[in-house]
Each structure stands twice: as C-alpha cells, then as structure tokens.
Amino acid sequence: MRRHLGLPLLLLAAGLVACRGPRPAARPPLAAPPAQISPTQHLAQAQLCRRTSQRVSAELAALRQAERRLSRLKQQSGSWPTEARPVWDEALEQRYSEQDRELDRQRYELELAQWQQRQAYRQQDWEYHHSLELADAQSELNARARGLRQLRPDLFTGPASIEVNAAVLARIHQCDDIG
Image (cartoon, rainbow, N blue to C red; front, top):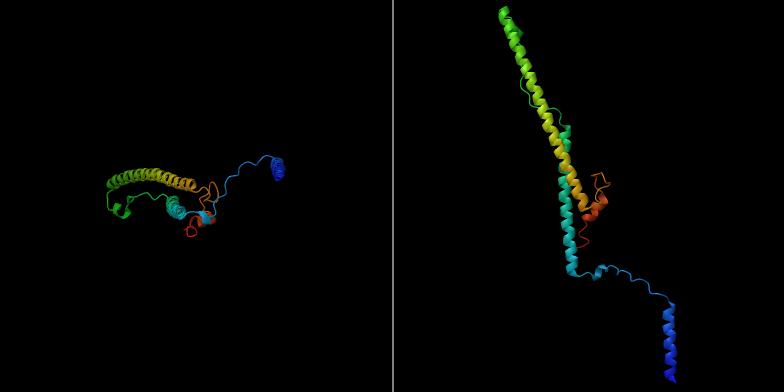
C-alpha cells in the first residue's frame, strides 16, 4: 500500500511544478564577487589600471602642452623682424649744396620706400607663417583631445570641452584599490 501513496504524491508534486507557469528566461550570471576573482585576474586588472592611468596622465600632459603652445601663439602679435629705418640727418644736409641736397633727398626717399616695402613683405610673411603655426597648434590640440575622448569618453566635462572631470580622473588614478 505504501507504493500506491508514492505515486499520488509524485503526481501532486508534478502538478505543482506545472502550475507555477513557464520558467523565466535565464538571467545573465551576476558578476563574481571580488573574493572570487583569481589572483591572476586581480593582477591583470591592477596592471591594466596602472597602464591606463599612466597613459591618461601622459596624454593629459601632452594636451596641456599643446594648449599652452596655442595660447602662446595667440598672444604673439606682429613681431616680425625689422631692420633699421633709413635716417634723415638734417644737420648733415645743411652742409651740402642745394643740388646735392636735392639728390640726397631723392636717395633718402627711395631708400625709405624700399624699406617700407621690405617691412610690408616681412609683415605679410610673418602673418602667413604665424597663421600656419596657429592652425597646426589648434590641430594638435584637437587631436590630443580626440585621442583622450576615445580613451576615456567620460574624462571631459562636456563634448566640446577640454576641462577634465576631476571625479573621473580620480577614479582613473585609484589603482591602489585594485592591486
């Protein structure tokens, strides 16, 4: 008779399982708690953190250097090389005859016109090269910022900013907690 009681209990258990409805979809496994990470994985994480921290630090230093270069170039004003302006010595002119004075005056005006032309050329040349340097410095700054954004998209305070988010930078440099 005991055999017959086992069958109804088995059927009752099967019915209860069936009444629970369909099984929920498999959940992704939870991340292993830190105590279950192997020492090798722990060491690898610490090394990766340190490498990332060093790379971010180096890239930030290069970004700041590019920023200083651009700032310095923007502050430069037309400081093209000049040569001495021709001098008109009136006291010396008084010792010449009227005809010699006129010839010397013409010579001086020609020298002055040539000097002004050279100065204008030097200014244009300086401005052209300065604009190239500015464009190069801006490109370098943009490339450095783009590289850091690719490395850590959350590093800056905004999409067009190169101001560093201090909290993110602190997390990047907290490798001691890992290793």
